[in-house]
Amino acid sequence: MADIDDIKDGKDFGLNTPQDTQGFYVKGNAGYDWGIKNRMSRIFNPVSGRTVMLAFDHGYFQGPTKGLERIDLNILPLAEHADVLMCTRGVLRANIPPSVTKPVVLRASGGNSILSELSNETVAVAIDDAARLGVAAMAAQVYIGAEYEHKSIANVIKLIDTGLKAGIPTLAVTGVGKDMVRDARYFGLATRIAAEIGANYVKSYFIEEGFDRVVAGCPVPIVIAGGKKLPEFEALDMAYKAIDQGAAGVDMGRNIFQADDPVAMIKAVGKVVHELETPDKALQMYNDLKAAG
Image (tube, rainbow, N blue to C red):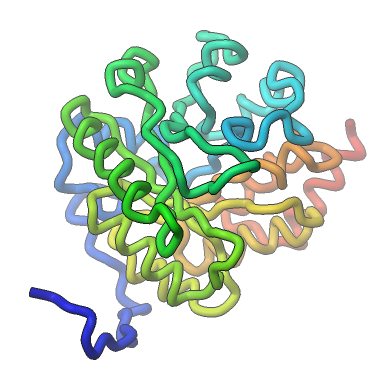
C-alpha cells in the first residue's frame, strides 16, 4: 500500500515526448464510450484540439459581480464567439435561449458563498437534470488542502460516477484557498488527483514556473482559468504561454466580460488559443476591432 513516507517530487516528466492519445485526439479520453467522446469533441475543436470556454458561472457564489449584472445584455452577445459556455442551470434556463447551440459545461456544485468557507460545497445538480439540459459536461471544484478537501473530492467522484452512466464528462476545477501557495507542486498535486479519480479534463491556473511539468504530469487535458481581471495584453500573454506549454485551452470570464470591448477580447483570445497567435499581434487585433466598434 502506498504511504506518505519518503515522498520525492517527480523530476522526469518527458517534456519532449507528447502523451500517446491512443487514436482519439483528446488526451486521456480514448478509453471512454461514444457519448463521452462525442461530448468531448464538442468541447475541444477537432482541428486545433483546443477550446475557448466562456465562464459566467461566478454568480453561484459571488452574486451579480461586475460584468454579470445582466446575463442577457452582457453575455449573450459573446456566446457566438465562444466554443463553450460555462454556467449554472438557473442562468441557462433563465437567460440562454434554446436556439443557442453552443455546448454547455454546467456548474454542478454549489452551497457556498463569498461569506462562508468556499470549500464547503455540495453537488447541486442531479444527473437526470443535466441530461435533460443536454449539457456537454458537468463541473465541480476540488479543494486540495482545504478544510473540506474530502467533501469536494467526493462531490467530483459522484459527478464522475453518475456522468459515466449518462455519457456526460466531468470537469474538475482546482479551487485555491486564500492561504494556499500557487506553485507547480500544488497544481501538479491537485490536477493529478483530479485525473486519477476519473475527471475527463481539469481546469487549473497558469503559473510562470513549472506549468509545463503540471501539464505533462496530468494525463487528461488542462484548461486554464482566467482568474482576476488583467490588462488585455497580460491576459493574452498568459493564454499564449499556457497554450505554448501544453494547455488545451482557456476557461475565461472576467478577462473577457470585464474588458473594455468583450467581443474584441474573446475574438483575440480565440486567435491565441486556436492559432497560437502572438500576444503582440493578438493585442493589435483587439485594438483594431475595438476601434472599428
